[in-house]
Image 1 (spheres, rainbow, N blue to C red):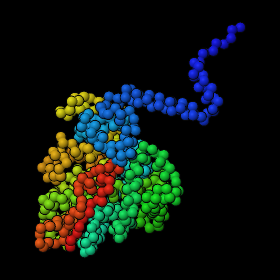
Image 2 (image 1 turned 60 degrees about the vertical axis):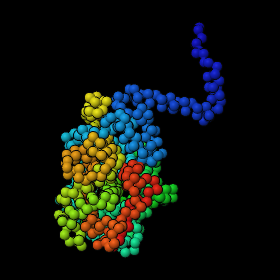
Image 3 (image 1 turned 90 degrees about the vertical axis):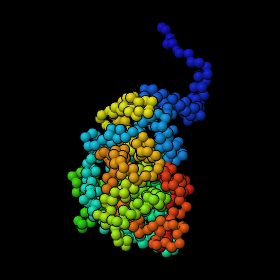
Image 4 (image 1 turned 45 degrees about the horizontal axis):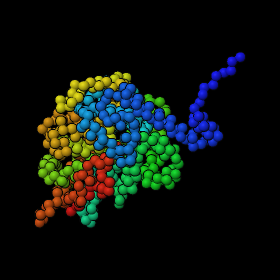
Amino acid sequence: MSTPQTIPIPVNIRNGLQNWSGQGLFSISTLYAAIALWVAYGIGLAVYRLTLSPLAKIPGSKLAAATFWYEIYYDIWLGGKYYQVIEDMHKKYGPIVRINPYEVHFNDPGAIESVFPGPGRKTNKYEFTGRRTGTQNSIVATIDHDMHRKRRNTISAFFSNASIRRLEPIIQEHLGKLLSRMDAAGETGKILPMHYVFRACTSDLITKYAFGESFHFLDKEDFAIPYMESTDVFFKLNHTFCHFPWVGMLIGLSPPWAVKTFIPSLTEMWDKQLMWLERVQDIRDSKDPERLKTTIFEGVLNSKLPDEEKTNARLTHEAQLVVFAGEGTTAYTLQAALYQLLANPAEFAKVKAEVIAAIPDASQIPSFSQVESLPYLNAFIQETIRVHPGVVSRLPRVSPDLPIVYKVKNGKNSRNGAEYFIPAGTSLNMTAQISHMNPDIFQDPYEFRPQRWIDDPRLDRAFIGFARGTRNCIGMNFARLEMSMVLAAIIRKYDIYQPGQQKQTGPTLELYDTTRARDIDLNHDYIIPFPAKGSPGLRVKIRN
Ligand code: HEM
């Protein structure tokens, strides 16, 4: 009878295995083995991503294509800086680049139709959006196209042009408060942090309009700065939530006391989050049908959507999204607009002349009809959103069923004529801050020139400040009207302070230690733009 043959094991491996079995599973040898396996897996994955992945042929940095750690370094370690890397990649590799193992980014207005199609083609969201915003059940994070349509349809009437006419008295009331707070600062000589003042105003407006009750931040002595700083902490965590979703889950599952103890800077925002939950329940329980009618929840609760779509948890996410989407974005645009007005007296004079002609009475708070179709004011707002978009994170869209074929048509690019096949299911992105700085479309893109929109209205085709297609900004008309009213009211009342002039003829505004590069321009992308570290923000001195 033959004995079974044994495979000879080299002495060093045999010794290693003996040591290992001697030391047990939880030994240093196990650790080494795990590390070796992990490194081998990482190398294998990187090689696959660079050579066999369906995106392997898309141009771009090899490091970015091989691993997410590249993006993590710029967005988490350096704090919202990956947008600059993407911009540089476009300069180096052309209008289509691969920005990480799974995502493609475009800098070409010719790609807008493919990335943000109309209702004729399905458009999913990428799962990263839900992770970033922390509102997974809201419309902005809804992955599936059909579900997004159903959810969006329940609230779209609330943001229609006809519906937002209801906003007029609400805006006028808040403008009255805003102007009187500015007036009070003029009396005392207090320097106003206008970035917070505008946020208090936009917050109050969106909460009053969407939930029937406002936060009353404009009435607070400090304009609710602690709440805003707390919201900023949340925004600054968005890249961490995206790349390490367990952090968001852990915070979400933690009891409020734990969040407040371990991340005290989130306290103010957390309280508001709990308040939303109570508010939703309150509105739902209200016996007064009129109460529900004045909130965005009416459409959802009275829709044919199944009950699981009407839970408090989901409505709270929708409420939070509308507040986040409506306050920081609009406030940022307003502060950038005020900066550009005060830094460019010639522009101020042009807008002022138009506003005076439309609103002859200086003491009057403007009406919608007086401001909504002022060509230069509109061009001014459009240019502000072009140069200083309120949403600076990239805008991901996924074509779930159909692949995209993209042909490079930019004559200056060495890849001109090259065709790229992008499989269905890939995350396709564009970024307003990058698209709007494309010198092939916008001459001297960094220059602030509202006149360009009047000289060439076709520039609109390259504008993505509110995104495009079926998942564009639902609050776009609301925001435009709100910004026109606020700016017209301020411009009608104030002039720019002229240091050499002996006697001012009326109330004036002056920039106080504010620079565009430090305090206004995008320095960190945390979904909404953040200025340079240590920036005190837009500050204004008011003289009555
Ligand atoms: C200047 C101000 C604003 C800018 C620049 C802006 C920009 C944007 C952009 C770029 C998106 C697409 C986001 C994405 O694809 O991930 C968006 C979505 C959205 N915005 Fe705005 N927005 C502004 C004001 C507002 C206001 C005032 C509201 C509410 C009244 C609002 C509500 C929303 C909502 C609910 C969405 C999600 C829409 C959907 O996914 O179907 N936004 N906004």
